[in-house]
Amino acid sequence: MFTGMKSGTATRGIVVWLIVALLMAACAKNEPAANKGNSSESPKDAPVVTALMNKATDFPEDNPVIQEIRKQSGINLQVQTVSVDDYEKRLNTLLVSNDAPDIFVVNDTKIKELIDNKAILPLNELLEKHGSNITANRGDDLKGGAYVDGQIYGIPEGFASGNSLAIRKDWLDKLNLPVPTTLDEYGTALKAFVNDDPDGNGQKDTIGVGLAIQAMQTWVHIFGAYNVPMGRQVMTDGKVTPWMLAPGYLDAVKYLNKLYQEGLVDTEFSTIPSLQSFQKLWNGKVGAYNFNADGITQNWLSRYVEQPAPEFVYTLIKGPDGHGGYLDPNLANSPKYTVISSKAKDPEAAMKLLNFLVSDEGDALTWAGVEGIQYQYKDGSFEWIPPYEDAVKLRDSGGYVYSVLLNKKDGMRESLFNDATKQGRQIAADNLIDEVRLFALPQVQIDKGTILDDMEKEFRTKAMMSTGDIDQMYESFKQKYLAEGGSEWIEQATKIYQEEQAARQ
Image 1 (cartoon, rainbow, N blue to C red):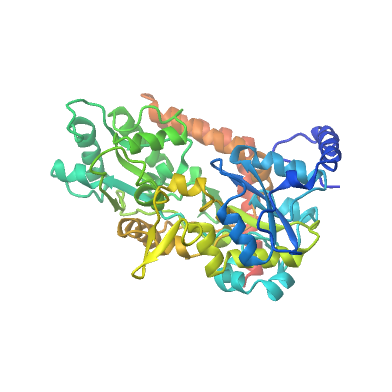
Image 2: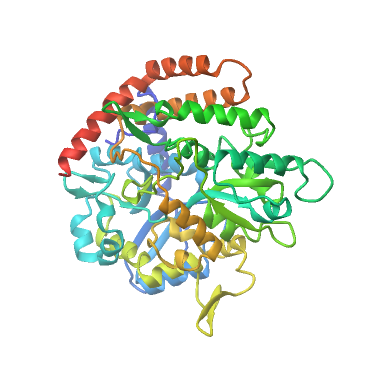
């Protein structure tokens, strides 16, 4: 019996959940096969492989891209899509009802649970026989968080985010300001963005830096200026220590408090949803924003309302001790892994399908769509066929969306980046903050990770807005954090690190 559930779910809830899921499975057995995916353009007598995939936008499930995947791979891929918010719940339902898809993507907190419950297959032999593209593309990244006792259980995702700070270069030029590289210069630029009418509309309605609690990336450059790898861990006095207890964290929070008190950050930072935070940038109201470069200066180009379009430059902000940087993408320690179910009827066909997705042809297909429909080469140069230069319309027609199953590292996506995006990604890659790598997660992170993370977010929010004693607030937060599971986290993480280092020597 499969015992794993979402983190924090009470054990007594499993029985009820199993009963509901089994009833759902019984009903599903009576559904016609056509309800489980469109088989249009499937090769005759091709092996059937099922997959569960999340989707950020609705798109026709029968589209030119899925048809071409089936044709080129020789595999009758049947995809069940579910919204991002409902993906984990749907996956759990399928797992406990013994109706798991052949291929699915799982987050790093669940991989060990699936291995322990023998819910997913070890992939070594399948990769050796049918995964040459994958092994060539991923290399040592396969020996990361899903590598247990010499067996590879999951294929890490291949997207390195290139997360870095973008600043409105056109605003800097208008205000005769240099591109900031220190916290002092950064503060000066943000003040001008807020007070000196950079958009020229005669109103004080612009924001210095866009921050959002729900968009972790927006904060990375500030903590990086204090040598703190946000969301990761460091070594302190021989112990693996979570980032919010790292030296420099409190100083970064005090700097954030200063920005807030001076009115230089988005005042809605504590409540604004990620999408609405992005929209403020798209609508020309934000001067600085830390996010994925392939969003800000690539995929979002059609989102900006200003004409001419805003001009961005990426930069590295250094703190008082000369530190500054961004997070290591560390693909071996991926937050997501593509796995094959132990219930798969044809594991070899599943691996062949995944191997196709990582080929040059499969990568081009899942990223840019079908040549001649969504894009073309003219005089040897790539160009989108209208209206698919708009990333939204591309997704709506099946482009990009299937790359979430598995993608090629350094593939077509990266080859199409413009110069600004390449600059942002290069700055991030060249300036990585030191951190301790853990390939396995502490059990307390699996059990209480959300609670501990929320405690930090609550403290950061209150401290930024406070006019009181931040040192005292931080001391109270630390004691509560350690008592609620932080001490266990440090103990477990240190033991994991020591064992992993010994095993890899």
